[in-house]
Length: 154
Length: 179
Image (tube, rainbow over all chains, first blue to last red; front, side, top):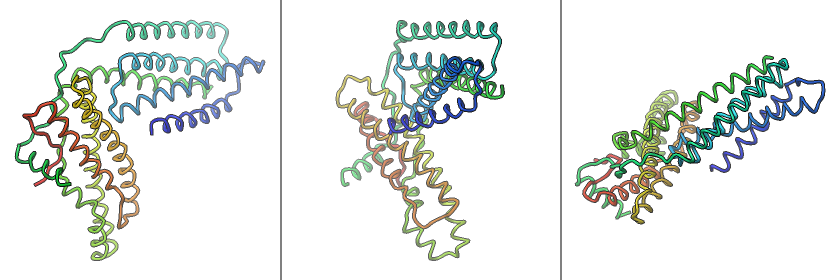
């Protein structure tokens, strides 16, 4: 089910991001440059959409993440959101050269912050808690025995 | 320009969602030991009665159409409430199962795996059943196929009992109510 859903959501995201790119007018007279910017925007919309879907899917089913997977996905999530914003702005708002330079710095700064996040999740060990088995709810023994008998009779 | 602002807004909302999930994950880790009180026992017989097709057919024959639709909607609303509780219980049991996976005892680990599988299946079936119920509320019909939720819940209950028994043989475990 998970694989089918991810494939389905991926296909929907490709269609939606392509449609968004279709509405964009491009920021440069040279088709290669404006095309590359629109492609960046499209790729990061798909990435951000898939990451938010994965988080929602795991949240709905209460699936727990292992530390490294969570850290990697968190870093990619932050990076892709920032890139959607900057490439979306660059590709559709035709900003000045100064603003573009600023966006380059923002992109690189975000990427370095994400690298620090990945370092943290990979290198810093998680706090080891004294783990006790989570107790399941209790009830009285007579009901428990009756339930067990019913199961055995099935 | 409008498209640029829409994309920036989309990115900001997505970033907030991701950060919220990251924060809620760390909160969940710190309170994972207080999971069992979150489980609400379900009256299985009352639930079975609500989704019984024979009962619905009987009401369909006995009541005038308008009255039947009203009663059936009430029953569907009650069934939806039961299914929501079953789904929530399944989610809590999945978390409990994941915690139990760290055990060194292979039998307990196997029981935990079974509990997780059944919990996930029930959670999926509960979501689908809720969709069917909301559709059926618009057009109440005599039969509604939501018995997989009930059967799944009973299987989940038995898995939870098995895991609870293996983890702590002295404490009985139930997540449903039978008189």
